[in-house]
Length: 202
Image (tube, rainbow, N blue to C red; front, side, top):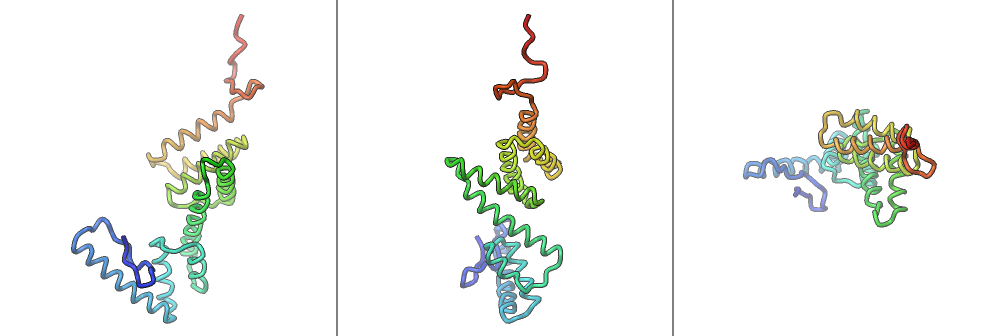
């Protein structure tokens, strides 16, 4: 639920922690204030244009193209540019994930390869759930390519990024298992064989 302007622009999302008469009134007041801010921005006020743009990023209400177009000509600080880049990365990953169909292995492989490319470029989203999805896809790319070094880097990154986050325990455990499998020597038939296993008869 959100408060929208006549053309569908988001003026304020509903704060679900304040589902009371006072809460709705507070959000309505924010929406009206943001409508006035938008009017000033459209009238050419540079400060208002920047403030309204940053609000739209916070609301997640823009497409990649809209965000790129709206940011043109706005003097953003380094921190604000990083915020925009993270927003655009999130939108890009959403498109990548939507294109991955488990019933079509080639689309899954393409998505995993794209995630691996972004990972190699050092582009990992701040959102923990999206970051976990991206790292999982990158790990899949490493697994399919038997790229031990890449999988090890993914594991290190996951441990650093999600330190203390219990939600990511399973992800890290799975990465450790997959890395152990890749590191295990094979018996020549493609089957893993632990050091010293086999050949003990006698």
